[in-house]
Length: 147
Image (cartoon, rainbow, N blue to C red):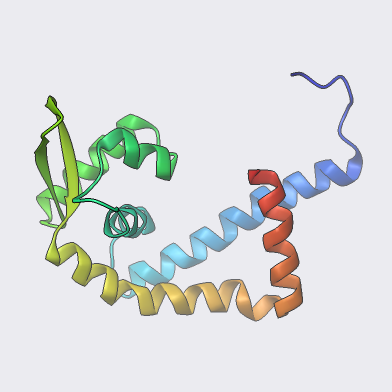
């Protein structure tokens, strides 16, 4: 459904701040991971989703749905993760042509090593700039955009 109503100045400012803030915080977090010798945040996100999988991994389309990556980006990323020994691809028992992607022990170990740096970066670039009530309010507001 297309709205005929033009966004207000406040809505346009909110949009610009949201996009700029997201870019600035992600850039800062990525830089901290890189300085610590870790791969990009996308690697962490894929490995985290696979570690949370209820079964022995996820089909690529399931992973794509969780991450909201374009398929071609995810496919290349999975190739790099597999080459690094962090994930493995298995045949899908329900679909002979399909595959399941699963995290390896090395992938779980990388997650554990990356988390302290990632956690500190989140605290530094978001938590240190917002009070707890502000962070809760921001989470609620952003949740409205997702729902």
